[in-house]
Length: 454
Image (tube, helix red, strand yellow):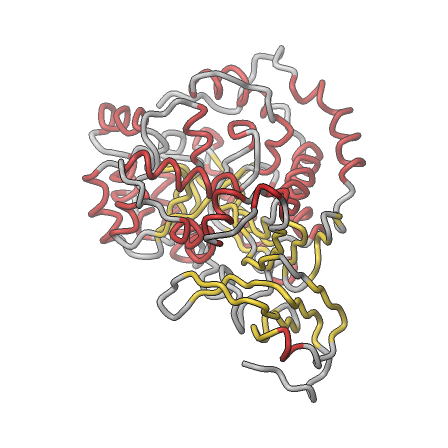
């Protein structure tokens, strides 16, 4: 599609760049010396720099030496947990939860959540992340941050069965109230925490609510092999089998981690109704010394999309999806014992279209093409660590870094230009957060929001 010079001015034209594109088989390619025309928050055309030169635009970005990618998507995180970055280090999973994280989370106020979310969004925008899927407490505060800073998000109010029916009701109320907010940039999900903290009755009720209201479900399940073995010992079923028998598996489901998925789970996932996706966050698995990782190849073979994620910064220390992309490729090569899995192009496919489908945006995000939302990042490859370029896909996955992102755009709005954040005052957020940290990290009260006992 080539826009006409007679058309009204475009909102934005990005020119003289290389654009990552997908063909009709979803194969990754690159259009050289290309231009992107944006109007009303949508990509109107991907054309050549020469063809776009005569077009008028309210704003132009000339980006020679830069690559335009679809905005990265963090498919599972807990953004406000950046406030706990580095607080619980070098601990097994059970001690991490019970001795540090869940006691500290019992101190959380809505203001703590809001400040953490603002800092997290700043970090993600600077790393080229345009959308994230969040699953946490006090999510009204996170929704305000998303609306203010211009990002896109799939948000869910997390709940445990220990909260009683009120927890599930709050999750539903939040999802219905915020669905389509921020000009459509916010989508919502029901968010039971996990099968080991939410009982079968609540899971079954959540599945019914999801189907009744047309909502997806976002939860942790089969996070590691220990959880799967504990579930088999206690309930005679794997976590995935628990989701199947309670009906959760027959919803549009975003499942976090899945390193404990076993072979017998795969037919259940393949046959289940609705959209299925798994979010993989390999850095955290390495930190916790889990022996397994997300079985990406097995899931893809049965049609389950695998999106990239970071989890919360309390476990991952970072919200860098760029790092997750590189680690996913490397860890899968090791797990498969095959250097041909994952290739750089496969990793880029997980980072783009598969991540978009994982968060329910498969028809509107994940690629730079006419009719797609203009969620775009520009990556500068002029640094010594990215030169020379023999294989552009490999350079992007294995050589480029999040700091190479120069510009981040969501819905055609520039949120960061030439590394300058335009929608978040980071120093002000950090100052207030530091003032609140002593009260936030106090564990002398002996409370915790839940107990990890799988």
